[in-house]
Length: 231
Ligand SMILES: [Mg+2]
Image 1 (cartoon, rainbow, N blue to C red):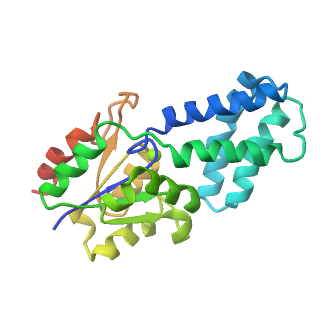
Image 2 (image 1 turned 180 degrees about the horizontal axis):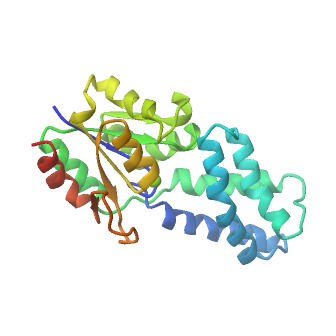
């Protein structure tokens, strides 16, 4: 038996488009509050990745991350949020991204293709537990794969080898029998290779420089590439 492990956000979930939709909802709230929504949401985008990295590394709690991703942009604009506004912005954002996430068109054909070849599937994600669980329910992905591991629940996140090993242990598989597919060169690809797994970097936009990492442009390539890798 073989195993393909997928990252969730920006690999299966079209998080960029989902976030754009969420930002449209946030803009309505911000406009009503008399806040420059374009400047505020641009600041949100800038502060989010560095804050999320601190969360992944266990240096911010989930609540600290969520508070700061909407509090820090107020600071950048020289403003202070009124009482309750940061909580409200988080509610609007999370309702959109967790309860109405968009999947890429190639997700279901890819999962069906692997299943028809007898290949097991799993999801390994670093996102916050509550939000990722909602996302898995809303999309049906939670039932569509054989196993899910969420970094916050495990207490260890990608790229640490223990995150990948946790998935392998569930199936009692050796690393060489597993393939990781994800959009992050450092978290998904390098982390998996360091843990002894095979890996494919999903580079949908063709934005990563050609290097030593094996890459694909679409999940449609996973079944064929995994057959060659597992031969
Ligand atoms: Mg990702």
